[in-house]
Each structure stands twice: as C-alpha cells, then as structure tokens.
Image (cartoon, rainbow, N blue to C red; front, side, top):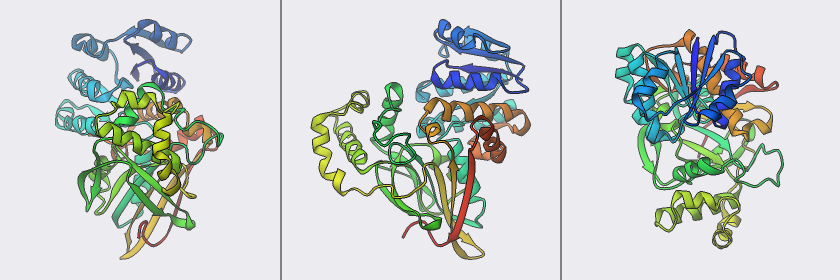
Length: 389
C-alpha cells in the first residue's frame, strides 16, 4: 500500500512514523505546505519521501493523490480544508482517512458519501481519539444491547488520568488546538435528544451512573460523536460527547463561553487566555468553581450506553485503560490510531464515507494500539439499570 500523509505537524508526524513501521506500507509520502518541515519528518523513515503540497491547489493535490492508494490527512481546520481533500481523493480514486473532530465539517464530509460510492472510494472520517477510539468504544458498548437508549462518550481534560495533579489544565490545548476547543465550547453544538439531532449550548452537565458504582459528571462539548452515532448505533434517547473537568476548569470555560457568545471575545482571544488564565475571568468563575459538580470516579476515557436486553434495562461502560500520559499526548493519541486505521483499510474497505465504527475492525485496532503502547486494553462492564436518573 502506498500512503500519503498530509500535514507534517505533531499529529501528522506521529502518524507518518507509525505508518513507516507497519508491514504492508510499501511507500510513504509526507506532504506539507512547508516542504522543509515535510523533509525533516520523512528523513530517516524507511521508504518515505517528502513533498511540498498545498491542499488548496486542486491540480497539485490531485497530482499528489493520484500516485498513492490511501491518503491520511491531518490538515486542519477541517471546516476549511476537509471537503476539498476528500473531493480530490474521490476524483483520483484514492481511499481517505482523516482526524476531523468538528461536528459541522463531519456532516459536510458525510454528504459526499454518494460520490465516494460511485467512485469506489472508501473514506473514514474522524479516526483519531475523539472521535475514533471513542466511537469504537461506543460501538462495543451499544453492540451488547438489543435496543440503545442513551449513549455517551467522554475524554479527560484535567480531571482524571493526568500525569501530575498540579499540571496546568490547558497544557495540551495550545495554539490551533486551543482555538478549535473554544469553537467547540461556544455557540451551539450538536447532540441527540429523543433520538433526534438537536443544537444546544455546550458545557451542559451530564451526571452518569456507570457499572461498578462509578458516578460523576461530564460536560458537553461539540465533537462529532452524536451525529455519527445517530447513524450507526441509533440511540432512541440522549447522546453527547463529554469532557471530564475539574469544577474550577468547568467554571472558567463557562466564563469564556459566555464572553465568546456575547461578542466580548473571539475564539482566538479565548484560546490565548487558557494558559495563563485571565485573572479577571478567574475571579468571575470563582462562584461556579465551588458549586459545580466534578467527575467523581468516572474513568478517564470511555463510552457508556444504556438500553434493554430481553426487555430489561442494562447500562454498559467500555473504557480504555492505558498509561495516563498517552491520553494527554495529543500527537500520540490522535496520530497513532489514525495510522492504524489507515493500515487496516485495505482489508475492511467499503465504498462510501463512514464514521470509524461503521467500517473499522475495532478489536483489531485496539490490539494494534496495545502493541504500540503496552498495557493498553479495553474493559467492558455492565449491570442492570440506566445511566441517568
């Protein structure tokens, strides 16, 4: 398989290094708008070459994709660049994988399903951590139920699984990632209610009861899981993506959200006061820091579903157990799963545009992840009852 990785930043570089070490990858092209950066990433990787690629240059992009079997794109923001790369892949008959974690661009990419089917192209949208690993966990949990009612995915920000309790809450949200985060913590985001896609303000608390007596609260954020799980698992009730936050962090983010929504801050400006935080906004957040619920003993990275089995209510949690540092290394937890998804595509491919849980072999991907990060495993627990009151 000949693969092109677009974007030689932290996530693209990690994906390229992972792909270069996998069997079946015969050739690897590392492409970036900055050819020198691409060259540095490709240097030393077996069978790898570097190429300057501007994804907004349609003819040049199509020329690059025509020479490979599969493209993995990490070039964001996806609301600007995602659809253009996928259209080029469809035109050149190139299979496609990305790490899109914006819900609105995800919907736009899914709209290209008919064109991809007609061209015989298989595209997997959102193959990183959340979505990606999270949707595979959700599929594993929902698959144990006869009927799915509620379905949630959750990932840690600063509440659980951190290498050190004293680390800054925004250490992994610098630069473009921080701007993206502020977009997904403001305005309206997609969730499911009554099995239907709705738009709500983010940072809404959701209190969960998981198997084994685990309890805690997560906070909604605008990731794509609800809109894709709506198509695959089809929950009849509620579905949202949750962040696990310390109460003080949830209160501070809510101050930023209100300032963005009121036009007092842009998402870029809000990202700049994540770390170090704005002193005046910290003071405004103090009342909420003492009254908001925390994550309790919820696991660090999980999907939880409830529904019925033989007419009885059952709640299920599928959680990823791994080194806590992995979950806070954005390059690793995003780039490595995306590379593993790309590598397995020839064996599972089906024409069309798919969320990860619709086409990928989840158990195999988690097994491959455990090779890259020993000790990683999926634990599934279930018991009678519902997730929420």
